[in-house]
Image (cartoon, rainbow, N blue to C red):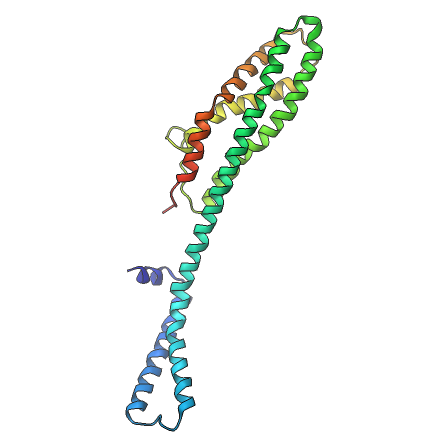
Length: 237
């Protein structure tokens, strides 16, 4: 029975108080019935009401401590899980928007790679400034999804499969990490390269970045899978 489970899972101090309260209630009930049979209550209306109230209170205490407190705890847990899922949904939407917004870097990268050598420094400067804005914003949104959401789900008691080889959130996060972390790492490399862009190293890095930004921009299915898995993740047993 549910009530029996609630009782067994309650702290020892709560069970002790509950037993004492039930014992007092039984004693008051027995005393009241005995005095009622003997006709001793007829001239003590107030005392009868007071004794009845105390008896009811004695039986109500364990119910309040064990059952109602447990129901309130479960309600608070469900509310926290709802808040965690809403926060996750918003975070994934923000990440998706940041990914789409970062796609504009592709145009700047393509223009930089297609420019003749004399025009590359200015094109590289524009490209790097654009990357700083878009990719720094992307990094913030990615950290929230990658780090904060799993820990918040854990705190809320929601089971979230983070195994990168299993279908669900883990596989979606792993797929996104392949593209996003590669983009952010290449951005770090390019951001410290000098503006003299004649070296093949810079052009190769820009070419690789172009490919990973394209891969990241085409990750809509992974975003959809991640959002769905976060919504339907079951409570942790």
